Length: 402
Image 1 (cartoon, rainbow, N blue to C red):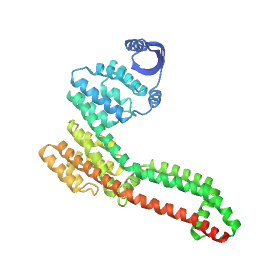
Image 2 (image 1 turned 30 degrees about the horizontal axis):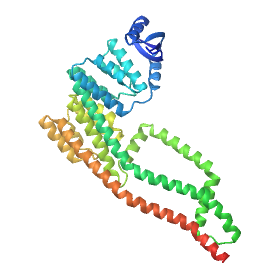
Image 3 (image 1 turned 90 degrees about the vertical axis):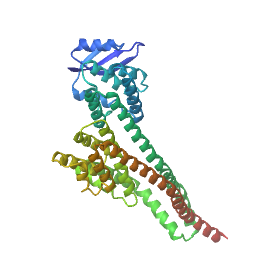
Image 4 (image 1 turned 180 degrees about the horizontal axis):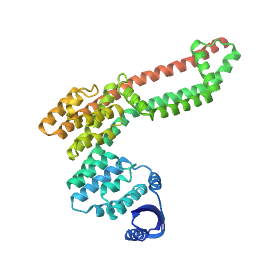
């Protein structure tokens, strides 16, 4: 099976490009004509080039994936064949980048490949978590149920991310306001007043002299500060790409004062949600733990799941391994232990996820309520110091003139 990059014309005369897999050019041409495209040219390409082309599609949003899997599951559970389902979704897709992805998946399935294999060729769009559930659904004959589980999981993650972003909007707005105010005062107001005060021979207060010193430093050395900031950013980026750097940063995230509890519960909610979906989809234990690892985003919890997989291979249970882990609450370990004994591990993770998600939502709401007055007080103090540093010498100048 070869991969071809093609140029073709649609029914309305518009030019389109893409890639497809076929035994030869004749078969590739036949596939294009089946989809109402008139072939113009073909070029055989290597797999690396295909990956490069796939990256050029851009990222597909979580909302698009939710709609895709929700509608695909509904059609498949209604008895519509997979190929016909994908063709219908391709027609109604409004995003060109996602339309191209669906088109290539259709070509691969028409060439005899399974849905999971076709999806796996688009790693930037479909992560290992999705592929694992699709593969299990194909093997069990419950593909529709598996796609529903994926849609539910993505929907839950999307809703959770929106809650976190909503909680951060107000603090970010206040911080941006403070930064803008400081830049205006340092850049426009203070430099104009310095000359006026010097000519009048007014003795500037200590706070004003400090602000002026800061202004002069930023004015004279802004280029050096910018270079240092960029250099530090690049160094941090290089460090975070190393295994040690990623693990250390993940560990630091779990030990931030005041935020330690909520950050830990965010990752626990994400982990239990993924495991609940995977176990409910009948994914084998070791594969479920390995796939959940990819969806967590924290190296400490990824290491815990790696150790769990290895211990299970040696005959241990999940709850036994987690009893030794300080980042796993005793409550979660107990729930999993009960689930293992009753044979309902997926329900145990589902209940645990509800607890952690609700707890995180409550904590975020409390933080948002408390942050509002705290930020207003901080903003008021900051503005008061800056304005006082400017108004006090003006008052002294008026006294001198009088």
